[in-house]
Every structure is written in C-alpha cells, then in structure tokens.
Image 1 (cartoon, rainbow, N blue to C red):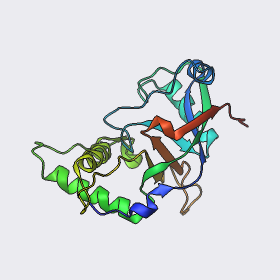
Image 2: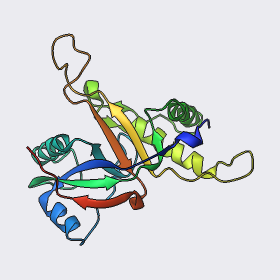
Image 3: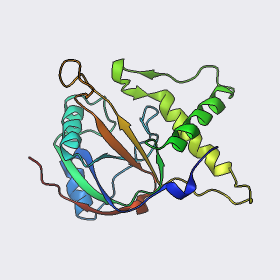
Amino acid sequence: MASSPRYEILPGLLLGFHGTDRQIVERVLAGECDLAPSQNSYDWLGHGIYFWEYSPQRALDFAKQAAADPHITKGRIENPAVIGAVIDPGLCLNFLEASALDQLIESYKALQASNLPELPKNVGGIDKRQRHLDCAIVELLHAIREDATTEQGQTLSPYQTVRGAFWEGGELYPDAGFRQKNHVQLVVRDTGCIKGYFRPILP
C-alpha cells in the first residue's frame, strides 16, 4: 500500500476534547481510570478513543445529544461533560494527506475482493451517521499494515492515531460552502499518545 513515511509523523502536540458523562471526567482526572476506546461497527474512523480536535463546544454538543438519545453511544450519558487531552499524534493515518487516501482505496479494493456475501453500508441520511463501510475499510487497512513489510523486509509500525475532516450538518447559510457541524476528529489507538488530561474552560 502506498505511503509517505517521512510525512506520517505529525510533529508537536495538539488539544483534543472528548464528550462523555461527568462521572467519567472526574474519574479520569482523578487517575482512577482511562477513557475507553470505541469499538462500534459504525465508528467513522475505525476503533479507538475519539476526540474533537480543538473544539470543546462540539464535544459538549455531542455529549448532550447522546444524553438525549442513548442510541448514539453505548455508554450512558446522564450529565454531559467534556474532558480535554494533550495528544502527540505520532504515527498518524491522516486522511487530510493524499497517500493515506490512497491506502483507503487499496483497502476498499481488498474488502471488495474478500469473501463477504455483502459489503457493509454507510447509513443515516446525508451525514451517514453510521459508517459501517468506512469503519470496516479503516480496520482492514490496519490489519493489512500489520502483515505488510517494506522492500527491505522490515515490518511497518502500526498507526498510533487516525485523523479526518468531516463536512457535517446543513448549510451554514444559503449556498454556503461551510456546514453547521464541520469538524476534525482524531482517534487515538495508542493510549501512550495521550500525554495528559485537563478540565477545559467552556463558554
């Protein structure tokens, strides 16, 4: 699968925000537990711990939405809250970069060639809120990478994070190129990339 290894490392630290129940926030900040990775078949970027990049308000909006509709997330949210994290993206499968998109296409072709009687489907309206197909392709991409070697016979390191941008929601104004819920998500697969948690300041 094509890749640009020298550019797969995202340098520096960034801030991510995770919407969850207040009880979880307090327990994580107290060092009693860690955030649990999501492992749903419809996860947009595959499995891992999801963060809204530089957007605490979107994380809170998601937590409120999940509290009102328990079907959105498996973990019950009764008191919506947000926890912030300092993240080193490390080796990142960054879908804002061309070679990562090439890998996604190759993974789709591999899924097509598999013995599945039917491919998973993305469902849920214009935003495709349940992305079974995308999740399956991303997870297969990771599995293919585990078995791949370089021309020198070296194994490839697993991706530590996955990053993607999403144009979601209705038009921000008539004929707009912007949408109401545009955002960048970061999924942490290697918890060592999370360097610390903090309590964010919200409006």
